[in-house]
Image (cartoon, rainbow, N blue to C red; front, side, top):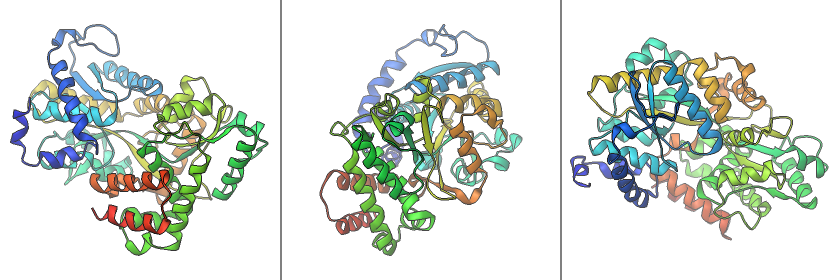
Length: 443
């Protein structure tokens, strides 16, 4: 199984794009891929029908990691749109993003690529482009005018040297602040916090009322979300960019950034003892079930609220940020299209890219996923109250900003996450953390 890997001289670089824990995950993916390869094509199933995929349209095998409740509903709506356009969707869901990307990469270098594979809207797949491992979908992007409606941050990720190598599926904002209406009421909180200081006052009230103030999963990426929320809301746009984009050492050692770190650390005192290792959706369930008051999490959390039949502004509240013009940090998902010369697969790739971008598909997907569409010319009335807030903010380009993975290499992003999680879980002088972050961002 490893022999095909030797023909890519920069494979180690490529592998770094699919996660810091890739060593373990990649080994697991070899087994997953071997199992998949042993399954006859006739036994594969279409997620839209649950029956053997026997249609005559373009057959697209799609690798993704959307397995949680709201996520699975979203991918089903995407599959239905593809089927309605005449295609046959072959679903290949692999739990966990790192493992799904590893399976896709291993399939590609092994000579048996899927039609499309999910990646994040980051630099995760840049090395794959450099190695000539992806097809472009220029014909679709140029015909449909992607450059006219895609946000600049997204456009700069999917379009490389004039060619479109990925189709954006959604826009997520990772730093929403969610809260339980019921818990707020029982804690005597009558209005949403408008500043971080007001949030701390509310967290104290929630604890005094006998609830867990902050629902949090003690995993590195979730710690990073809390940090990013604080950096954008306490530090502001200029400091955010100086730290993550410019890696400005003076800014990292400044008093404003020290305040960001101290605020981040202070939030740790509001989580419960069960926090370490908790999955994000289990933390969201604490808000849904009225056990906790607040959670910092991306808007994919709405999928969990939706499955629980809870509605925005009725059962839970959503705060995109503090101040008059909070930043909207752009994160999201794309599908990349592995290299192939087979006409039927190229046809399927182009059809899928076209279907993904249509306004109706975008709205249907976002309603289930919790995201917002990648275009603003959609019917916002079909979206929930939180999505409408996000879509309104996105119309102001001055408030759009990239998430850390847009500005950092995978190695830098991983080193920063390690430094932040170490600080979250340990008693370390903040000045040492500042120096650790300088070292991390210089890696």
